[in-house]
Each structure stands twice: as structure tokens, then as C-alpha cells.
Image (tube, rainbow, N blue to C red; front, top):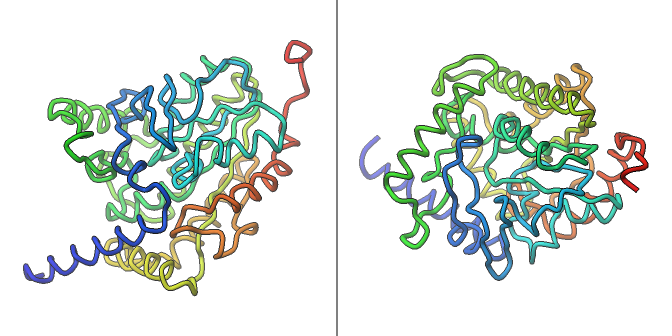
Length: 333
């Protein structure tokens, strides 16, 4: 491709990024002001004890107030459940779920986290949260997006400097970035159930198998701690949306996937979701497909949900997971 073609492609990418940011309230706080640090467990994590007008990060590096150790539900998720676009810490899906179920929820959602990263942090979380009786994993989009935008890579986490903006006021120092890259690549190799190289590519079916292996590993860790486990497969815009902005965002993503992986977004998303559901259910892991509860009007962009949609979805999830709550132990009362 000529130099002019590259410039055009970059210009188009900038337009799409600007369009995506314009649809998410308080985008500057989420993309620019929050800072991250290297983490030997998950590769990267949110810097602790941050306070912004609409976002607070606690002393454990997760959104919201500090955990008090009395939480009975552990929630693992990505940017949607983290609350990108939420009007405040209390306007997020895990908080709405807490109100619906009537149980205290520890939200360990991290923007950009893949399933293998959640698997890595489970032991640390369960050691801290000894009263947890149910673990809920929200997953799907981040793993598919990583596979799609890296040309089919199965292993590894999003590279920090590519996933997040790094203005001068929040950029990691050069040495810290180098340490982070080393830990990320090492963690990807050590945590892989399949022993694959960090840059090895694979098919969509390979991605499903990779994700399901780590889901099974989370299930096994939970079983060892007598904690129930439930998987929520994140909803996608599976059909071409009618909304012009949503369609522009989804078409751009679809085009990037077709160029790198040979599948359009509209083919890859339902195929990935349906295959993942089949594989996790085949392993006996309680799994729910949330797509049936969503409509186009519920989306801010191609993935993040409006606040009212998250509130409604929390009610649906409450009904799905209630049966997985362990019988109450008298010491919990």
C-alpha cells in the first residue's frame, strides 16, 4: 500500500475513534485521566486510590469503594461492567445486580481484561474475599476483539500503549513500560493452558477453545474453594445496526477483521458466541447468553450499554444466577 493509502487508513481510524468517544459520556476521564501500572499477575492493572469526578479506584485497584471482606459475590468483567460511560460509581451493572439480588458484590472488572487474566487474579481475589459464595464471569468481547485486531493471536494481553491513551500527564515511564512488556509476555506464556507462543495465531475455533479452557480453570479454582460459578456471555450487535453511528462503528470493525482474519464482524461475533456457549455448557459450566435480552437501542457504541439497559439487564441476570447461590451458612447471617 502506498504512503497515501496508509494516511487515509489512519485518518479513517481517527474518525472512528472520535465517533466512538463522542457516544460515551465522560470519555476523557475513562480514556485519558485514569492511569495504569504494571502487574505481574494480570500484566496491567489500574493504579490504586484514584479519585476523579465520575470515577474512583479503590486501594485494590478496582472501581468503587474498598472491599470490606464481607462480599458474597465476586464479579469479573471488562469495560462494560467496569462502567465506561456511567454517571458515577453507583451506576454500574454490578451495583445494579447487588441491589437486585440483595447480596454484597465485589466488582473486580478491569477494562481490556481477557479471560486468562481473570483466571490469573482469581486466587488473589478469593484469598482476600473469603466469604464469596458465587463467582460471576462476564466475558466475550475482549477476547474476540484481541483475536480480531492482532491477526488471530490466541495468547497475550492488549499492549498497554495501544489499548490506552498515554498523554504526558499519565504516561508510564519508559523503564516501567519495558518491565510491563516483559511481564505481560511472560504471564501469557506461563498462564497458557496450551503452552502456545505469545504470538501464535489460530482460527476462531482455536480462540473458543483457548477461552473455554481458562473458563474451565476458573471453574476448577472456584470448586476448590466451594464457590459456585456462572458465566455470562456478553451480548454483541450481531446484525448490521440501523443507527448510522452504530453501523459506521461496526462496519469499520468488520472491515478490520476481514482484512486480518478473513471473517467479517457480523460473521465472527455470532459464530464465536454460539461456539463458546456450546463448549462451556458441554463442560457443565452454567452459562447464559445475554443477547436475547438486548436490542440495538441499548447500545452506546458497538459494545458499551446505556445505563438504563444495564439496570434492566441486572434484573435479568439476577433471575439467571439466583439458583447458583449456595445455601446460607449461619455465620453469614
